Structure formats: structure tokens, C-alpha cells
Image 1 (spheres, one colour):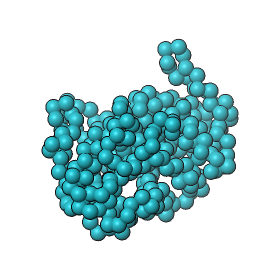
Image 2 (cartoon, helix red, strand yellow):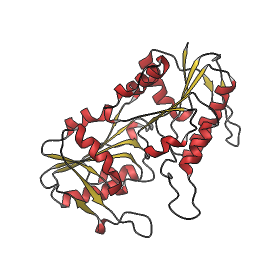
Image 3 (tube, helix red, strand yellow):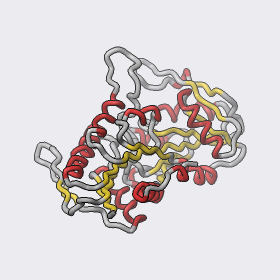
Image 4 (cartoon, one colour):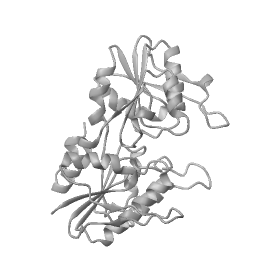
Length: 315
């Protein structure tokens, strides 16, 4: 069965790199829009009876890019491929994964329901914020989840000097910190306690480190960096507690608002993200480094296409 790769406009850079690894051409799509912005794509090639893969990060603007993925996905379904795989290098709306206050939406479930309406054969997700939401998709959809540690750990080993410690930027990131600590050969990890003010911003006067970072390099690990407020405060707290240097690895660089200049001006020595969300390298600044996940995702897509296990790709 022939393998075809398509992408929305948000995923073009990564999809082209994935196709390069697979030695394939990106299937042509006319990404037309009406004057009011309404998306009306047309697939320019025949994909009937193929295995068609749609690569589409639902990065900011999240609602716009999720809708684009659904619209192009609908065009794919109506073009009658034999198999249909949706790859979301960044899966948005995943923070709203529980109803913890009155009268709020469970948007992680809603977004999964919307994708399930297309009845894709497979969905491939990459370092989601909440792994519990993998069960929100319809049971007929085969859902796989991969981790960026497969591409990040080697680079993190290059950055730090012993002694070093892995850290989670808040108490909710303990499982991720423990996972990276194990991969990096560390027996312990530390966490930071934070408090937000009435404006929703992290209050640096109430931040404290849970554990010892004195004389150590600190590797902050998280699934994404958005405004950078939490990690900047964690870095300042670590440096005040005697840390030598602070490094950050976050899989998805969302970089909302003034986050890029704030991160470049803050106490973090190096910010490492992946290209799951595309940013112009010239606009990232000297501190921000991007690792490519194209080869990793290409291998995952090929394994799905050939019916092979993905577990060997999980460190």
C-alpha cells in the first residue's frame, strides 16, 4: 500500500523534513481560503486506497489549527484512502483535562471527540500534557504516544557538568522529572513550589525549591514552555539556592507574548525545545536551541505503516 504524507499550513516545515527522511514527496494540497478566512483545501493528487498520513500540530492559534486539521482531514476521508493516520506533533487543548471548577469545559475530551468524528485508523501524539487524555479518543481509534526523551537526552548530557540534578518546575511535574532523572542516571530529582497572584502570574516571592540544588547544574524539564513565567521564576529560585547553572528542556516551544525576550533575558543558561512547533530560528535569540524530531517521527510513521511496534522508540 502506498504511503502519502499531507500537512496543514502549520505543519509544513516539519512535514517536509519528515518526507525527506522517508525519501518521499509531500502530497500537494491547495490551501485556499475565502476572503473571510474560511479554509477550503483541495488535495491535488489521487489518494484513493493509499495509507494517508496527515501531520498537523494544533499549535497557536490553537482553535484555528485544530479546525484546519479537521477540515483537511474531512477532505482526506472523502477521498477514500484505505488507511488514515493523524499525527499531532503538538496536541493543543490538553491542559483542560478535568472539570476541577464549576461551569468550565472539559476541552481535552471535546477535542478528542472532534478528531474521533473523522474515524482515523491511527492517531499519533507526541509528549502530551496529560497522558490520561489518551483514553478520551473513541475506542475504535488506535492511539499511540511517543516521548521527546528519545531525541533530547543525548543533548542534555552534553550541556551539563556533574554534579547535576533534574528538576520539575512545579509539583505537578514530578513524574516527568523522575523519568528524565532515571534516563540521565540520577537517583534523585527536585521540584519547585509556586504560587500565582490574582493576575495569574507566578509570584517569585513565594517560590521555593523542594530539594538541594547547591553547587549543581539544574535541568528543568517540561512538556511545553508558553509564557516562560514559571520556568524563569524556578531558575531564579534555583540560582538563589546555590545552583551553578540552570538549563531548560521543553518539548513544545509555544512562546506566547513576550516569552522569547523574557527567556533570553532571564537566568536560564540555555533553552532547548523541539521543532514540533515551528518558529523562525532568526527570531529565537541566542539562548534558544531547537532539536529536530523529524527523523524520529518519520521512523514512527514508517512503523505504523508497516504494522510494527512503536515500543522500541520509547526510552
